Every structure is written in structure tokens, then in C-alpha cells.
Figure 1 (cartoon, one colour):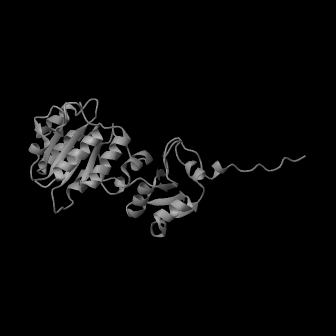
Figure 2 (cartoon, rainbow, N blue to C red):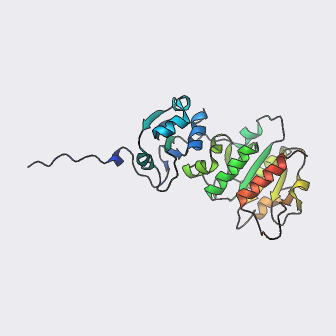
Figure 3 (tube, helix red, strand yellow):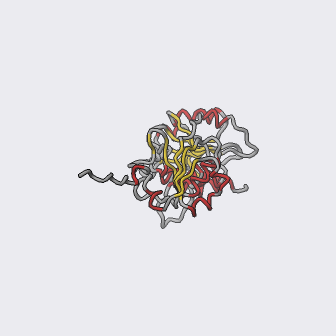
Length: 260
């Protein structure tokens, strides 16, 4: 007796992945991250998998850029890593085209430029939160090393809440050399450190600024700190030893944008 044809498993249509980044692109997820990606004309998008509710929230104008599949909530989760907080939407897209530091420095601005430099901050949640603050306070770019830093991913984009598509995320080979380039362009380079020489408000100048942040464990590396013009600290109450690096970045960016 012939065996009845087997029912195809839904995973045939929504393959489970251990990582959001795959050879032919990556998956972004979460309402804000997907909206920002669809609004970014530099972003090549291929496919959206989302619920009816998420489609209504994102809107037909943005979804008009991409082939969309309306599915249930569980089906969205099948294309993403386990535990991804997707809010009913996933977007398959290409990684953003790489930007060079020269591209950023060539961009004109009618106010002080602030470039955030991350020295070996490897946690994508921290890097994403810093990107979000960079967007909120109008930073020109966030610079990271191409090693020891989170590459573009669904986790980074979700933590950035859309900022990955609005703030240039520049990967460089050498952070110390990038700081030298910034110095040549008259950026005042401030290392944010607990043992800084002065409070950040005193260290800031009226011109362009490069704000350097190090990992919570090792801090800013010696060669990187030596390329800075000054080291500054964020004044906090003595009852607290330090701030999380993403919180410190938000406070510092607010201080640098505060009218003097």
C-alpha cells in the first residue's frame, strides 16, 4: 500500500536559523527597526514576514517597498533566533553598504559635529543602545573597530530601535588611526573615563568633538587614550561606582548638546 504524501512542515517555508545573519542577507525584527529599514533608501529589502496587526502599524506606504507575507505570530518567530522579541514583524534584507570615515567627515553640518567612538564594546545591546542615544542627540556617526565590535545584526538593530538606519555605523581597521584622522580635521578628542582629569562639561569645546567610550571591564586601551586630547568623567554620586557604558553615553551626549 502506497504511503500517503507527507504534509510539508511549515519550517520548509520559514526555515529556523541559529543566527539572524545569513549568507544572502540578514533578518531584522521589531517594529521600529523594520520601519527605519524600510524608510532607508540605502537599505536593499527583499521580504517581510508579519502579522496583520504589524502590517497596519507599519503602514502600506513603507510596505510598498517589499514583498510581504501576512502570517500568524508563531510563523514570524520561525524565521528568527529563539527568543527574538519581534513584535510580529521580520524583514529579510541586505547589510547596509559600508561607509568610510572619509564619507562621514565629508558631510557638512550647520552645528557642532559629534562622533562617538567605541573602543572594544562588544555587546550588541550596549552598542545598539548607544546608537539610539546617538540618534536622539544628533550625533554624526558611531565608529567601531571592524574586530571586537558587534557587526550589523538583528540584535544590534533591535537594541538601536531604528537608529542603525539613521546614524552612520562606521567600521574602521584601527581606532587609534581613526582618532588621528579626526584630530587632523580639528575634532577635540575626549576620552570618557572614571579617572578623567576634569568633568565632561569643562572638557568640552565649542567645536567638533569625538567622544571615546571604552568597554566596562578594560576601559579605553592605552594607545587609544593616548590619541585623545583630554580625559573627562561624568560626575556621579559617590554611592555609585560607575554607570553602564550605554547610560554614560546618553548622559555625555546630552551634556555635549546642552546649550552652553
